[in-house]
Image (cartoon, rainbow, N blue to C red):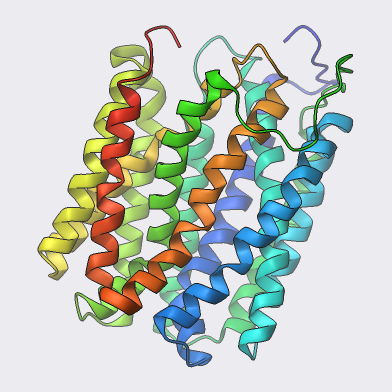
Length: 386
């Protein structure tokens, strides 16, 4: 923390400001996720068509990854974070007005691009804020993201229940979150840009130290966004529930993920990161298999709860580990590991749509359940002390 300047702002206020940006990220994205079934219905899309449209998100993300990597190496992450927050929520407003599939494709391309810019810079800020403290606080930031996701899902439940149109719901959320971003910006952490003598490529893959962490994060983020994009549709198609019940199941998932993240910092000191990651893989596989083998309301919700606990701590702990890389700066390490992990977050869920169309949505969830075993296997490759 020696090179970080707080410019008159206390570490506590900086921590609160960073937490607000995590809240903005989670609330806005959850607002979109909660309305996917509505948008699917309004545009008369089947599972394969929805899956194809969702591919606009990873395309936007991957094309923006080199730009974000470059910007984080040239400017303080606080400036990039504000730019990302404003553009992300502006695109959320536009999502509410999509009246045709081609319009949704264009908007989701911009939405994915802005999300990449916002998320990487916010996590880079979190890693730097962590350096102001002796105790672990990194999973709590992601816990705030989950609380925001829960709040956004709960609001979505209310909007769906009262048949509020997306062109009212999403713009209200987007404008509110842009205003909150401007309010919190003044207390964010300023980091001087560290000039690195050696020239590094703008787009870099994880090195040997980071690759196993990248694979674990890939699986976790694939499972996490599958739950965002498809949990509501799974309950409608496989469990044959009503739309409000489907949204409620997503809320249960978010509560479980939120609880896990707030417990994460304490669990790190008690049982260690490796065991947390191991148990997380077990919970992911077990939870999704319960939902697949017992497609009834109560068992499926229990399965979603297990899955939420399983994915809760993986990403924040992996990002914390990535920041310890000695071959690149923390910001570039996060960008590097995100090159792999965000592929899971954005490419796997659209593939679920194609699998669901070909073999049924229960089979597609079974495939995702098997990915939990990859986490267990990769954890065995982690050496003590890493």
